[in-house]
Image 1 (cartoon, rainbow, N blue to C red):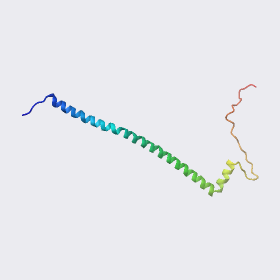
Image 2 (image 1 turned 120 degrees about the vertical axis):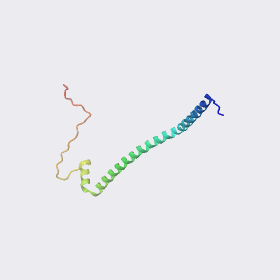
Image 3 (image 1 turned 60 degrees about the vertical axis):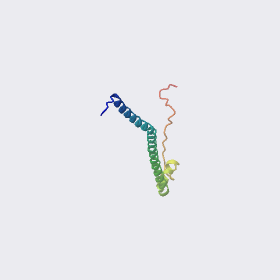
Image 4 (image 1 turned 135 degrees about the horizontal axis):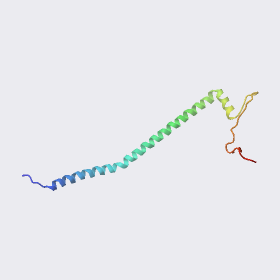
Length: 111
């Protein structure tokens, strides 16, 4: 003998389905902050990795400069000429200087 419950059977299945959806939403809502935190940390790791790579490149260039100064006398001579403005005895050096960029030219003034 089968009893037809009518709408109550359909309502029971609807409540079970909605309860299942609510459970999934609860689990997803509880893990969402962790997912966001994980994403932020991954971005920070990427930023720090690029910063580390940049600093390693800078260190490599500085090591190469130090090696050049310690082992190559021409590098020391070039630096002395450029930075300290030294020249060899009997040598004539012509130095050009950049115009002062803060002063405006008086091209059209009538003084």
